[in-house]
Amino acid sequence: MTLFLFLILVALVLGIIGFAANGLFYLLIIGAAVLLADLCYAAFRFRRGGGKHRIAR
Image (tube, rainbow, N blue to C red; front, top):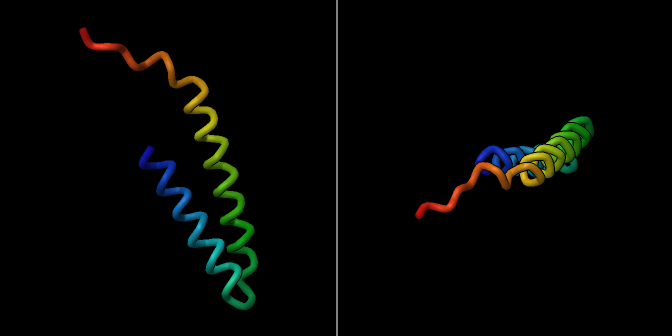
């Protein structure tokens, strides 16, 4: 979960810098790519994540 939130933060910062700075549009593209990769990672983790948790008795 920490990695997911960190990558969201990195994508947000890169997007803001890429949008605000003149001539750094490629950072906006990289931020969008990081965001998409992070969402794919989260979907993969949450889809198969049911088997690891056991109920303690």
